[in-house]
Length: 618
Image (cartoon, rainbow, N blue to C red; front, side, top):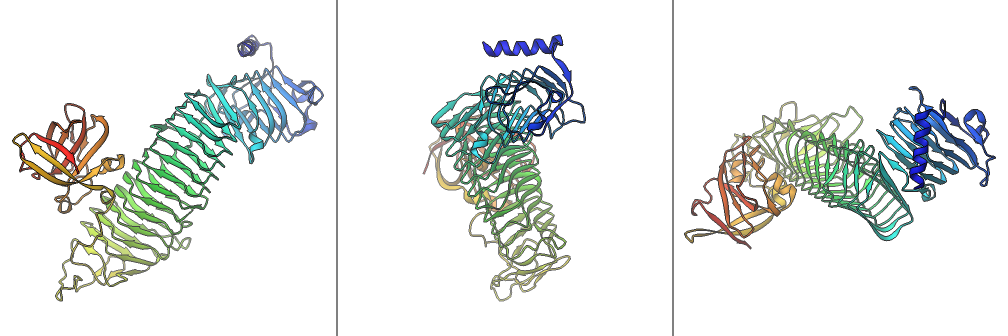
């Protein structure tokens, strides 16, 4: 009841014009608590704090703040003020910086970008404030838990939704908060389940440990969707939508052993931002749209990015500054650079990824990394060590066992690249094989690479062509391979799929035991046969498994051989069968929801009748 009465009072004051209008209030020390700066009463003690009350403040276009107080030690209260038109991105309607023992109550912020900012302050109380903003409603910043230990009540609201600010919670579960703002400070062993954010602030986990966020639904947050700061062992999982964040979908800073699993991060400025946080893991997430999928910086040690799906991110993964990062078994489709390794990254492992339709598959400025078993298709340049103009010297990298297919350039090595070992890669149907302007080592162990257009002979039968391959612009492979049977396993995501036997039968009782690859995870189902050369695809079959009955449609973009697809019900019953034409926009589905689907090269099921059943998998 108090909240309703207080808010109505503020609204009546604003509408009827009882509050006196004035310009911004700026207080930079205890000496500035004066009548000229809006103080109407009080002596600055805990029993009689300075009182700033009843003002309507219209913030000029060139001013960042409506009320700004910093570097004070005296208690004060801001009450019943209306602040509007604070539109500077770097500003706020009310900002409290390095203050203590302050109360902000019954205030109304409207027509403003940011509401209340609190920084490096202690022992503050916020209650009954209504923040109608187009940016961040409440932002609390600090370098220690003490600077987050405030009493911020759920009588505050951001865009009509309550503020939930918890300090010191432990061993508890919070469920179904439909919030304007959520902060967990000093929490331990807390589960936040099914939180909902829509056009308000995000979720903040600060100076906490073992917090788990599950099934979050975050849409259009005005800053980060989830901020994790100095909070090790935080887990974000099973959240189907973290979308349209102005900054990062998830921001991780100074927080070791954070995991993000099975989340959908869509149209954020950055899907996940990781800064100075060791042993971070992102696994089985989906990223779509937005400039960057994952950005790692701050010398983060041993981050692992595995089994994720990236669709139409300009940069899929950017490793700005990291030690021993791993990017493996991920699927990338359409963008500028799938994986960008910058100069301050060392010992990167980029392996078993599928990258389709990118400007660059892998762009590397880092040193002592390994790039292997990647499947890169329809890139402008498959793997590039760009010209760095003496600002980076990528040294001691290994590039091996990659398949670069139907790309314009296979490799490009700039002038600063040194001691790169390049061997046993497949450059297949590339318009230009490679350029090497650096000081690199082709065929370091006497075996070079396989080139689909190589015309040289192998008169002694040792598997190495007798004529070296000379590259446009410089570089030379002295030991080209004459057989493409050189990869230890299938490249890209295909090589990580589980191998099983599918038992099939038709209505006439004929059976077939068919070796298949299981695509039972999202990134595997996303890839399927995409980018596979027909010569390799003829020997493959992929069985797609879904967790629940699906009505998904299959496409043939970037699939270069004709396929057959058979759909099965939950009991393996036949639900439909189609022939699919290669590299078209056509889509194929079943008339009824299906639980599995089998893709095979056309004709591979010719020994069976049309209505094929799936008896089981072994």
